[in-house]
Image (tube, rainbow, N blue to C red; front, side):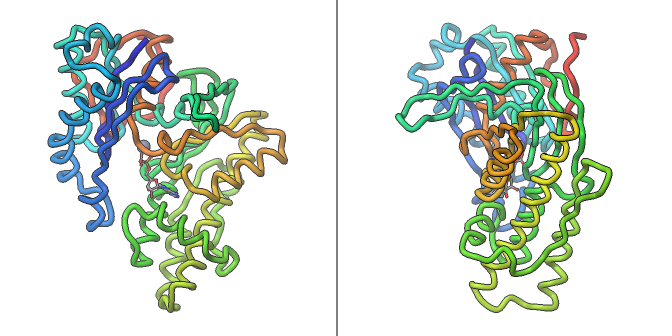
Length: 350
Ligand code: KG4
Ligand code: ZN
């Protein structure tokens, strides 16, 4: 089954064609980072406008990359999917209208997808292997899903596709948001995660000990304390030079990575779960990837991570999640659905 998927929940206008949930035939991601970086975060009005301007090009480019034209859409595509939420209302609407228009013009069934489920199943997508081929990834249920992005930090026990028990979530800032805010304090740019990660590779992680918010007896997260600790540190110790900046980035990254890793493996142990799947922009972090893999090896647990291309926001993960949803509960009959505060919920047939 070939699904044409659209993702516009935040600041990436993206479309993809995904075969049977795992095989990405074509993917286009048009990033708005340049527009938002001077504001140190995403400006909703500018995001909606940029999606409106970009969407037609992104749709056309995705079809072109797959080697056909709009004339063949009806023949080549079986269904259309779009991100219904959570996200920015105006931004989501652009993708929903585009998807529903395609579905209507080409008489295709359609399905709306929760953005978080896109991240949750992104590690299932085929990955590039060293010989230039594709590697099929098999993740067994139950697995522990860790969604770590700019807007979310959620830990979920996934018993089957669409069957969830939410174990913990952030009580304040998401992990990516903490990186972004720290970058702003340090005079760096948006998005802060990749820049802090890069500078951290040249610094000493034991330079400052930032508090690890373990929140005893809970699987929830809280990252605002680490951020405030950084703010207080900088007030007392204004930045001296590049070397110190690298050391602070390394110490900050270490605190976030250790917190995420500690919580995930504690939950996996408590719930006797042997597989962990990461998803979301923050799982591109080089230390987080390394720490999860090393801790997994010591604890006889398997860790799965999406290709870097599928970790941040992209439409391939939406096409993938849509496939599992269609297989399990069929197509949705809703019209143009978008829901900025959509929560992660188990699927039901109603
Ligand atoms: O999943 P995503 O593209 O969008 C949301 O759904 O939020 O995640 C974006 C977030 C940003 O906060 C960005 O700073 C963070 O992912 N990020 C990283 C890295 N690359 C992106 N955080 C830490 N280390 C990275 N290498
Ligand atoms: Zn996301």
